[in-house]
Length: 307
Image 1 (cartoon, rainbow, N blue to C red):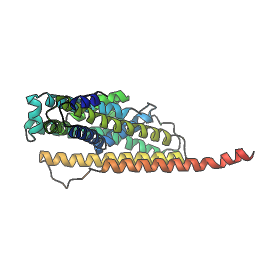
Image 2: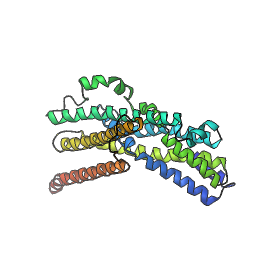
Image 3: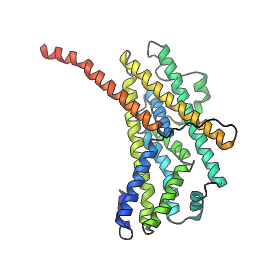
């Protein structure tokens, strides 16, 4: 709402077509960023972990995006008001600070995704081995012990806020919206109100999609985790897909880290569309599950009517 008000205020100084075009672009860029593979992997795997221990996880994505957006909004505002440091960071792609922040963001994102991916892999192995659900509370053992501190820090959706902040410190996303603010406001007539609205609109688009992702996955995990038989089969399929996506993100992150630090060089994995593919597969699974549930309920319904 605040962002839209700022856009409307900017119309006094900016070309309306350019202003609304930039506003729409910011929202779409935020929504697109929410489908980045690291976002999908982190949100889905944390949602699965919390759902498995009975914690409502529908707003995991909201808190994650809120933390991530903090860095984006702060950077965008600093660029908008002309802060020299922020503009230098945005424009100087090869600066030591930009390189260091980039390595930090990539390393941290890879680590978080790896931790929850491994924990969910252990859960998947347990589901495959057991016939009852007596230990559904979650994996226990050496793997959990090693990552106990990380797991303990994310025991509720709100704990994803600092995780999102640390993801955002990678600065790539903030630099993107910072460049948009710097270039876009010049094209629109140097409107400060419009410049301030762009990072907020970007954050709104990202938050909407990240929140929708965690709400959808929370329901899917909760449904798939019930009972045995068909539910168990869906649980295996859904968890396997989450672990697979996490694995691809971790491998891609490790390869990129090796290339940036020149430690080793391997062919890079393009994960540009992995988030969209994973989301589409989860949606297909949900549709199949819904159709199977409706089909399974028809005999009971017809029997009741005949009685």
